[in-house]
Image (cartoon, rainbow, N blue to C red; front, side, top):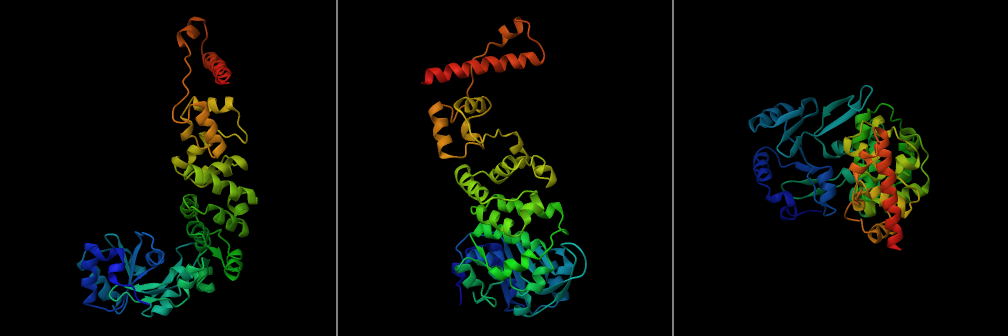
Length: 367
C-alpha cells in the first residue's frame, strides 16, 4: 500500500520539506513511525512526528544531525530533536536493569526487527517519507480497522511495564478492545518499578479520553483498580464516568467520581497531581441533591461551572432555579450583623443562617 505525499498533512510543512530534501541525499529508507502513522491512517490530526532513518551509520548520523542543529535527547538511543520532529536511527532494545529506562540499545538497520520493539501492532506501522509506501509487518492496519489492541512481541513488551498503562490510555482514547492473549500477558506484568510521575502521565491521558469507560474496565481486568487506587471498580462506575464526561467535558470527571464514590480523598497527593486535578477536592458532591442544596452550591459559582452538574436532570433543575449561568447572591446586610454584636466565627454562622433563610423564601416564591 502507498499513501501519496499530498495525502499527508505534514507534506506542506516547510520544516519537513527541508528535512526530507536533506535526508534524500543519504538514504531512500526513512519512515514516519509510531503515533503519526496510526493517527494518519485514522484521518486524525497528529503532532507526534517521529522519523526513523536507515542506511546511515551512528557516526555519520550524529554528524548530520549536528550540521542542522538537531539536539541529541538520548544519544545512546540514537534520538535527536529537530523542531517538532524526533529523528532516530532504527534500534533494538533489551532490559538490563530495574526501572522504565533500564535498557541497552543496539543499532539495527532492518525494518522488521526494528518494528518488533514497538508495543502494539497499531503503533508498529511505517510510512516511507519519500514514496508513501506503508510497511505493516504485524497486522497493525487490520487491528486498527477492527479496533483491536494487540501486543507485537511478548518478550520485548514484558520488559517495559509502562506499556501496560499505555494500553489503558490507548483503549480509552481510540475505543479499542484488547485481544485475549495480550490481556493475559499484561495481567502477568508487575508495574512496581514505575515511578509516580510515569503513572501520573499515563493516567492524565486517560482522564481526557472519550472512551474512559473502556479504560476503566481494562484497569479492573488488570487488577490495577486495586493496585493503583485501592478500590475495586464496579461496572456502574465505568458507566457513570462515561456519562458524566459526556456531559461535563471536564478532564477532572474521572477523579471527581472516583474520589467521592470510593472516599479516596488522599488520591491527588499520592499521584502528585496538578492543582487543576486537586481542585476536585473543593467541588461539592451530592449522591442525591435537593433544590436547597443546589442553591447552596450556587452561592459560590454559577451552576454550569460546578463539576457535580453531571446529569441532564441536574442541568434542567439548575436552569429552572435560574442560576445555571449566574451565581445566587442573596442580599444579606453585613452591617446589621456587625451592629447586632456578632464577632469571629459567629459572623460566618449568622451570614449562613440568613442566606439559608433567603434560599427557603426564594424556593417558596418559586412554587
